Length: 418
Image (cartoon, rainbow, N blue to C red; front, side):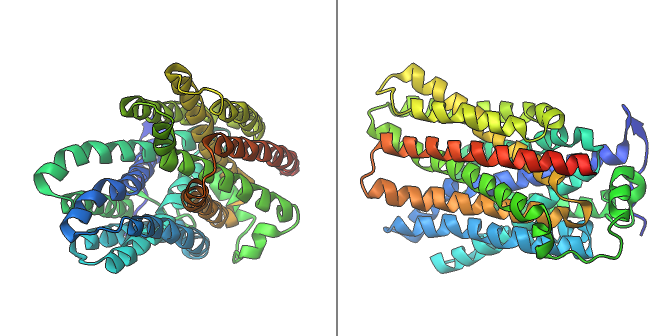
């Protein structure tokens, strides 16, 4: 079957290119929907199964994250060996089937296994969606395209909330997983016809073809991520992924509890978290331009901006307006950082190891998220004050600033060399 997209021009880009970018955006939406659906459905599941121990919730939530940590590097490595298209399609369909299987589980262990398997599928689809998007466009446009594609996850999470408000009361929690399972399967089936294989569809992407030619016949290995200059660049990149993942997930998981304990009304806390996400989406859309122009340097500036903002959260007492402003600024900084680092990962590695490099990087995002969720829980449960927690996050931002500055130097040397 010939799966080469039609090359009808549309504003300087081929119809096939635009179609695949929309496909990758849809895959990111499916991922965002899945990340948000479990916390939304869990209260209804707990009522039906009569789960009195909420401690099991953390295990269920983390199972999907651990699955992504396993799936992202594993399937990224497989994709570099057998092809982006096959792995992307298989990941999406597997992700969808495992989500549908959740409709039929009866016990917590079964749900944990299903969520872990779902995470493996997402671990393949998420980095490959980013890599495929990056390779469809000129290097000068990559950061901007990835910024737009990455907002699909935010849109999917929002869609999950709207769907829950309608489906949970009328059709029950299983309907959420029915919708969440069908969507990635449809995207995977569409990819069969719209997506060209990395190795054979180079006509649609001359830039990718030129990169791939240099690496013909070479089987990528994980050790390639640490060859020559990458011996220190890859650990620096993983450190940045971890810091950003930890901070975002800590803020999403624990900020409502911490702010409520400080005496903020529930409505104000909800508004603050809404601003955190809304300004994050704006930042994610805008950050691509400066990254395309200046490489890693905007990341260093964002960490420099984030450190005093997080420190400011320790000084506001119970004042509402400063809380809103600082949470909006925090969301702007950290969601911009997430998108920027995704983009840098696609530009840092050559074509033959790009999917593997991005996959391992996104796996370290999940490491950070687990640390943010469980580490935050241990610190909060251990009695650490709100002020100390936010000072700790501000300190991590300073570490990120130093690490990104070091990465910037090596990144510029690599670009000059190529």
